[in-house]
Length: 487
Image (cartoon, rainbow, N blue to C red; front, side):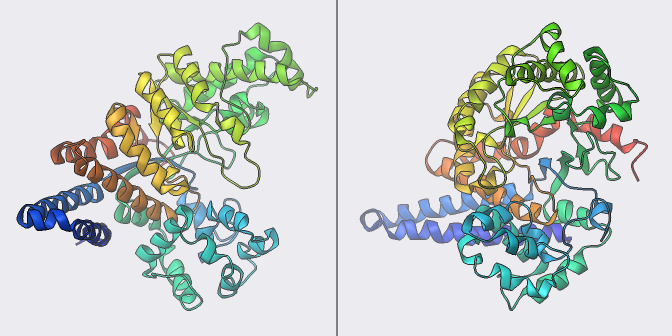
């Protein structure tokens, strides 16, 4: 029995225990129905319980494609110092991405958080910094992903002063060559991960190319633009907008066949209302940016909009889906909620302006997911990626999944992406996502919207098949397996 089977069975049985208890409690709360027809009532409860067990088993045993991560290569994580290494290399690292924001909004000072994540503070002393804030955050989706990962990887049910030493020992024991494979495939049962590199490299030549499949980042092609970052590797001196077009083309020609998609997170800086602007309107502003001169807001938008579509058209020509951030922002104390209101409407305009482009709108546009659901139901070229959403708000994510199944075509849904920098919490996030999907499908059956066979028939296509088709994963895997940079 391999570790994947052990983890999956534990997770399934744990969730089935919760589900069974809920079903029995519900039955006990309906005395009139029980008295009237105890045999029929009991049989109905048994059928409902068995259906839930079947759905949970299928959801947890089915391999899942992870469509969005920010993971560094394993070799970078194994470096205890130097480029690519984390701020700290101890158990606190698991709380460093996303959960650090909950800690700050709960009231933890920046000074204490910096100490908590510092490599210069003894790991055994870090609990005292976390302890005052742990009760306030431990039940959020961000914290539950960490808690589940610690339970499954380290055998620790509850983080406390008494268990920190065990967590640290297990952290060190696990962190060795091969631990990405162990976490992502053996424990989380993930087919592969799609990575958006955050270290300044538009496309990372990963040494694990078929496990950590890469997006080509286009945000610096139009936002900024990032002249040095993109032009230097291409060996092109940029003196004009036409030169910059050549730079963009170079990246697609070199990496288009290896990338699974292109990605932009420009929605953190502006709405995604990109108009199709001709080159002659964008060129004056571009020349000012090239000369490092001041540009107006209007001039910058003309440049960004023109270059956005230049990059998107290249992606479309190379049969690459376009992933765009929508909705909620990572971090704390800086999100303009009013801007998020317009993301779904602008996304619809993009679909209309480029019907041959396959757009993937990420994070369910939380909290405005009803609008995104309307978009994906209407436009053939719109897809929804639920990455990150299961830990932003697990209940809202379950609600979206449930509504999508009965509203929009199921082949337009990508259900999971961990969206993490540290690899360990990806496991916890995957468990939360699987639990939410199994609950959603079970509820749809119990409420009469789906038959049990309908629900079970959806599991493999949604968890696995959609991503394989949308991102051409068989073709990409074959190409990446022969890439010169693989090991």
